[in-house]
Image (tube, rainbow, N blue to C red; front, side, top):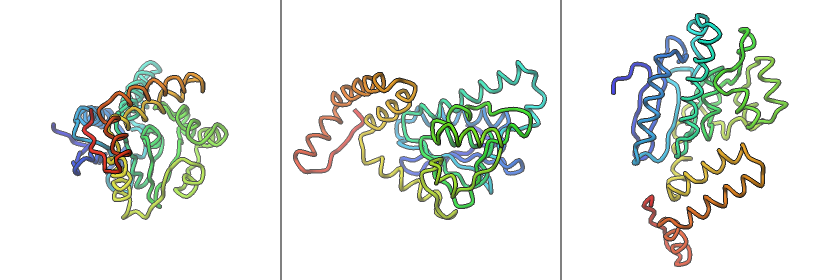
Length: 259
C-alpha cells in the first residue's frame, strides 16, 4: 500500500507506525487521517502483530489537526470531520492488541487526543501535551473532552481543556496522563520493552483484558464486574487458558498459541 504521510515498520511482533509530515509538525489533514485509518486496519487484521507503537517523525508527535482544513468547514462539515476522526481513534482503542503512544514531542489538539486513545502512553522528556482548541474558538473534536477526564480526573481535565495550556512531560507523568517519561533517545526502546512483557502473556487473554477495561469504564461497577466475569469464563475455556494454568501447576513455561 502506498502511503505519503504514514509509514509502518515491522519489528518482529511489533508494528511501528510513524506519522511523518514534518513540514506541518505532523498535523492531521484528511489525507493523513485516511492513511492512518488504512494502516491501523491493516495492523488489526495481521495476526502476527502482537503490539503497536504510534509515534511522530521529527520533533513532533502530532501537533494537532490541520486548522487550514477545519476553517473551511460549515457546522455540518465540521461535525462530520469530528466523527471521521473519532472513528479512526476508536480503531486504536479497540485494536484488540496493546497500542503504545511514543510521544516524542508536541502532542497538541488532535495529537493529544490520539495519544489519549492509545492504551499506554510513554513520553520523551521533550514531550508537550495540550488541548489548545478553545484558544482558536473551537473545542476538541476527536474525543479529548471524553478521554482526558477518564484518565486524569474531571478537575484537571477541565482546567487543561478550558485554558488551553500546555503540559510538560514531567507534569503529564505526575497527573497520570503518561505511564513513563524517558530520555528522547530511549523512547522507542522503552516502548518495545514494555510490549515485550505483554508478549509473554496469552494473546487472547490480553485482548480480553483490553476489552474488559474499555467497555467496563462505561458501565456501573456491578455491570462491569459482570462483563468481566463473562470474559473470564471465555478465557478459562481457551486452549491458552488451560495451557497457562497447567504450566503454572507443573512449574514450567507456558507455550501460548493464541487459541
